Structure formats: C-alpha cells, structure tokens
Length: 79
Image (cartoon, rainbow, N blue to C red; front, side):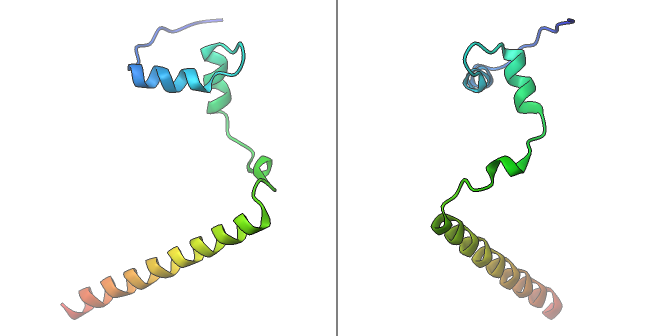
C-alpha cells in the first residue's frame, strides 16, 4: 500500500485522533469518516417528542426566512 506524509495543525491532529475507534489507524479513521453516510442509519434516533420539536423549529425558521426574504424584496422594489 502506498503512503503519503502530510503536515497538519495540532488542532487538526486532535480532531483526527478523536475519530479513531479502538485500535484504528489514522488511515482507517479518515477512510471511515470520508465515506458517504447512509442517512437511514439515523432513522428512529430521536424520540417522537424531540422529532416534533425539531420539526416545529425547522418550520418556524422557514417562516422567518420567507418573511425576511419578502421584506428585503419589498425594500428593493421600493427603491
């Protein structure tokens, strides 16, 4: 297997080290984190109450974003 030597900051090293599981090599940790994740593995992770709360928060955020976008549009149209 070919290898490459890289230089990273101490902060990046600490993050990379936190990704390791058990006796993983750094290469194994990077490879695992670099793969696309199947989002279905997160299905059911939230309680119904938490999921409902999150959904309400997202909907509120969308409403606020739409209202802000409309306000900005009106300001541009008026000028």
